[in-house]
Length: 423
Ligand code: NI
Image 1 (cartoon, rainbow, N blue to C red):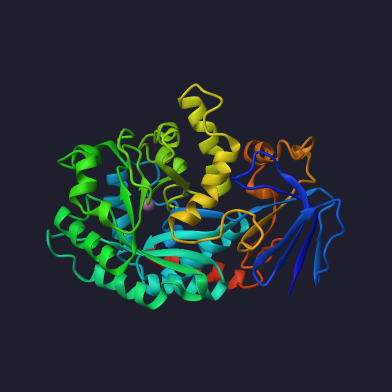
Image 2: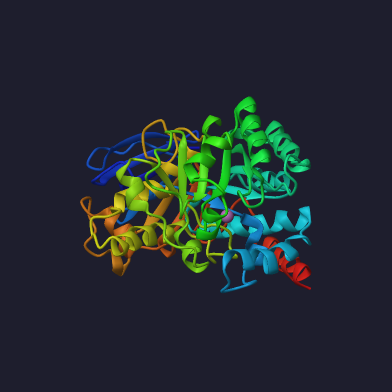
């Protein structure tokens, strides 16, 4: 089935100016983009924008722990280690595969309604997470959070992660799998070396929490540059470093490295502010993430995009720092690229139709045009303006409904699971 977006504004993170166009989506891809003053192509389904709708690429939540929706509200207002050790880990021990399945679906409801078409998830019972994503038709980059208490012993979690890759990597074009060592403070260096070697031999990327807090940096026992070398991470096919708040921006990271900026989570846990401007000056790839719902507490990438664009202007006392277009690019293309999804995150003919439809017929968009659409979206807009979220040319969220998910059942099961683990 072909869908025509007739007379809409479109933009993405590669354009200084938006275009007013007709956009045809067919067979899961953007088949045609032509100027709005031309005769529109025919289609089974037509969405008439009258110049008051915008189409942008779907957001990529490049770092989250989806099923932590079950833990939202626990251990509020505590520093990272205290929060993890006293509040989160004891409750996580009660999670079952079933609870994680429903908690993930609940996260997907939130993410789809706020324009996310792809999420990068690090957690446990990831087969159930893969099933949740595949069942709904949502894109996901998945890894098992690997922890290894004793040096040299990785236990079952690496094996479990490799089995996940074996079974799901590349499935239906929706899933990629990475190896997911949790963090330097939960995975000793010996084990990290084994994981890096395994990533290399299996051709898998690595998704890793790194330099989230100042204490983590001082406990590393070496410089962060030395750690990246010693751990073997520089040898992995590609690496995604979540947080990097305290990572030394003087390091030259290889091109196959992406940092994930999680501004809300870092602010809420009092971890600090990543030196984003320095990384962008060096053309380092940076994507955006929400982190889990118990440290943010929203799963709304639009909000992270706005916060990233504002925060660094203030920190650097520079209104030119992190432009709206840069923020949009971080929220879309950079995340897709980081996790091995090609031809996604921008609006080009032939690229995959992972899209968000935005209603501009609202008071805060008065004055919007091709010149300023990105700025209106980032500074004035919010995810409340989203009419629809499309993945592979199919609506997964449209006018408040979820065509591929049973919202009521998900809410009910998630409520039950959240109650069970807190009792
Ligand atoms: Ni995290």
